[in-house]
Image (tube, rainbow over all chains, first blue to last red; front, side, top):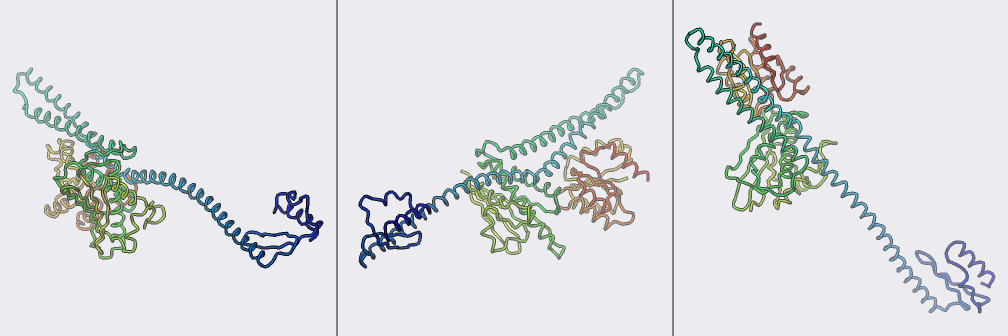
Length: 367
Length: 126
């Protein structure tokens, strides 16, 4: 290649952007002719210009250089890709974390939604007593006043007094009524308080808790929630609670979610069995057992639904795994329950009895 | 007229006894109470359909009020007892199911006793 051809060639390379500028190739004592050697490799090409053709050995050396360069370049490319992949993964992780906390929040609201009907029911019942016992007490006070008026009249007329025991009886009844009004008012207040605790979240700290009372309250709310919801089923609820239970250290607002979740799942499972049951003898039964031992306490939520197929047994605690169709389940209930129990230093395991339903076993340390 | 009240809330007995104390005192109405659907069925079995009017809550553990209604309407035909459903859920589904199963009335809690009294007296004089 002569000088003019080389200058043209270099210009082309500059135009193509393959080299930065042609200046460094233009030296004072430039040769008039060049032998060009092209050594292509995966990502580009090495070319060597020399005033004489390269010997076999030199060519081999340059070939090795090209290969080494190719390897280095490939590493560099890998590294760049890796860097890009890393930041993509980090961005995805951030997004996932945000989505997850959003979903956890949504699941929390969903579990509150499952309770709304139960809460309405539980408030209307005490309200029924508050309204009616107070109304009837007003009537009774009027009756007492009428009786006293009669007595006054009899006295004035010098007749024998009317029987005072009626008034006494009514007064006793009024007293009992006011006690009942107070009792049911307190009951309604308790329901609203625990609903708010559940919705807002409490201190987030473990507090000594009467687990049996918590179980009674939330199983009841869940039951009424289910009864007022879509496709209610009849369920026999058996509570077998250890009277020696005492207080268990629990983050109340978290642990109630576990109870709600396990009960809701049990109701759903038993509903599906009662739909598929042909015998007509199937009686859905939810049994909740608490048992205190020396160092731990065990709580078992057991249903006699269809059980859990072996092949999905290991997946049910995974986030987003659900057997429910469409929007019926988030697939987060059990996974969140599992996390909550774990955060209490305990364990949540499933026991499946073939064709006899499933049992979720929670074990918690109590010391 | 004997009225059977079915509800798992035990205080319902004191409430009815006071709200209807005049009718009870005069012998116009007589009340019996059952605290579950099961108890209600046993009562009906034992009393030989003495109760002509049944007031039942819907949501009770065990046999629900709707199931009780279904069984009563299936078993006791002549004369069919009057069954009124009382519930804290005023929702349409429960209402329609109850009416479909042959309920004579559907009342929601908190109960309006003046209205209930009128209804009962209406049935009483029919």
